[in-house]
Length: 149
Length: 149
DNA sequence: TTGGGTGCAAAGGCTTTGCATGTGA
DNA sequence: TCACATGCAAAGCCTTTGCACCCAA
Image (tube, rainbow over all chains, first blue to last red; front, side):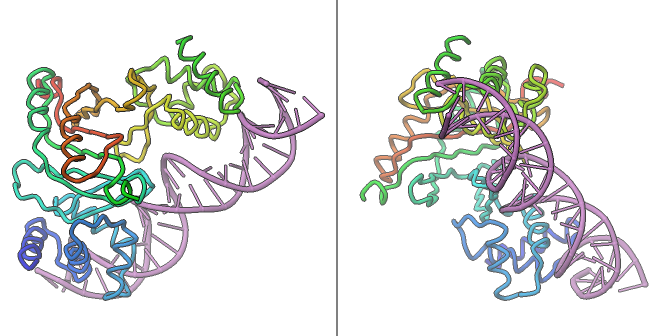
């Protein structure tokens, strides 16, 4: 995580932005909960444990910035909330995200990696002339636990 | 479209719902614009051309109903609007939707069909025990037209 | 007749914005 | 010092809800 934080500070400075307590705190919350998909409100609550004076607006503003810097990923579950998680892009170049399995019963979100789409995307480029640079895949269904019950 | 409309009326009656002018009008608007992805407001505007007295709330209520009856599909582009299009499910059983190609330059939405995910979904069921029943795939990129310019 | 449907306006709920104050560089 | 960042509250914006009236069945 210090790596991540250093990268963050560097990115901020490089973009003429300031390194503030609030920004570091928010990044740390997201960084300490990989794989969770937090709403702005949830992030706000976690950050307030250590920094009770932070404002919700700051959380929203910081989240937006982190998203633009590609340090976090957005995920929308159509439940009225936008969720965020720390980005784990190994390959900076592709920027491709992992996919989500969403259980319709318990609401849990599972993630998985798959390169299957690359074949598809290549075919789309050849046949339609459309060049895919990013994708979002959500699979809805019933997870093992819920199917077992 | 009369087929579709008859099916609609039948579905309404079967569910103890009434066939009203407004409901038919909204369905017709969506039916006459396949492949377009309309927001509630846009649907509202189109319907008002013929039925100026309709209320926006009725549009929202009807849209929700149509969605529950699986006559229309929802699509969220994360621009703050939820969009709808008439459903063209050939196979009632699978309920699988087509996929969307979203151009980051002009905003146009292209659709395509592909069965590639079925392999993936089968593998997910085998390895993770997660049974996929629906999916949503959005591919972002640059369309032929915009790449040409 | 009568219970579901509609229109209107108000309320909800998440997110953004304006502005005065605070603070990192 | 000073431009950017923050907190607070207000405003925005899409969507839902309450309620009296209306109209399919």
